Each structure stands twice: as structure tokens, then as C-alpha cells.
Length: 282
Image (cartoon, rainbow, N blue to C red):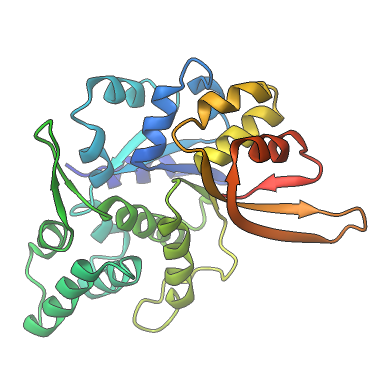
């Protein structure tokens, strides 16, 4: 069952709303490190928390993660791709299909499904969204018996973000994507490049209020606010010794530069410890 009506009711009369959309990997990170990164701090800046249905599918079997999500001290909405997404785009199947196409850039199976769907159907069947997620993504069977769809969560997150900005533009001040997948970062730019073309016409600013909260951004902010100490970063980042980081460096002459490269843990600690000189973007 969709949650569009509940979300719309919640936003009614509100302005300047800050929304956080959660991805699976970040949920795992928050859950794993809750004793160090309490929910009361992580979710404090946001007014509403949203999760796409396909992201919920990836963690819903895990009792601990499900309990963690429902204990977040902010209003939570699970947005169903089949029921809620169409309503936010005025029930225009063609425009939603085009938005899915852009948000699926680089995903061969998803793009092939969309191409075939357009070619075979002058009028899209009622089941096309369910069929898209069923046939358009590589299926993985986990040892637990859970079936997951590779990249489905990324597509859902980016699509939801732009639907919200288009449909609720008078209510929302910012949307943060809690994702550590660079695919999400690049898909945002792809959708934005065509968001206002006639076929889609979302009416979105070319400088939309979209930011990212990768796990590295979470760690950077936690150290900056004194929530953690530098030595704790070894534990928080122990799943990888080197990871690509996008960060801003400020110089004494007030110029700045953006860097994007692999960073090991000692270097990352150095970056996070110098807040005036560096800012982690992703």
C-alpha cells in the first residue's frame, strides 16, 4: 500500500522541509555503528525520512535493521514505486517511464526493458512498473533466501528525489540522499541534465537542493561535531582500507579545489581532522 496521501498530508502547510532518503548500505552502516552514531544525532537535521519500496525489500527481512528503522525519531514514509511514483507525476506513465530511463543510465537490462516496452506498447500496460522491477534488473538469490535486484535501489532513490522536487517544490528546502554508491551521485547529474526537456518537463532548478550523505560524509561530520574521536575512524571505516573520496580543499588565498581519488584511512583521518581546510562531499 502506498504512502503518497500520508506524505502529502504531512507536508500540507509546511515549508522549508528537509528530507532524507535512505539507501540500503547506509542503513547497514547506521545500524552497525549505532552505539557510536546514535539516531538522535544522525537524523537530527531532517524533518522527514523516506525509503523507496525496493530499498525496504533489501533490509526488511532483517529484524534488527527493521526495528532500527522504525525507531528513528522522525516521521518515516515507505514510498511504493508502483502506487506512489505515478501519483507524484500526475499519473503520466510516459513521463515516469522517461524518468526511469534516465535514472537507469548505464544499467543494460533496465534500459533494454524500457526500450522494448516503448516499442511493443502504444499504451503502457497497468503492470509496467512491476514488470520493470521484475525484468529490468539482475536478480540475486541470497543465502537467506532473500531475492534482491541489483541497482534497483539506486534507480528508485534517484527517481523519488526528482519526483519530490517536482511535485512538492513549494514545501521542500532540501533533499539529502543517504547513499554511498557513486552510481547514485552520477545518476543525479544525468537526470538533471534532461529533467526540463519537453518529454519530462519536471520544472526543476538547474541548481537543485540535492546533497549526499555517504558514510564518509557521516564520519566527517561526526568528527567535526565532536561525536567521535579520530582513532574511532579506523573502526568506522574498517570495511575498506582505501576508498574513493570526493572532497573540497580550501587554500589560504581563498581559492579552492575539488579532489577525487582513493584515500587510505590515515589520510582520511587527516582530512576529517582539518575542517577549516577540507570538506568531504562524498
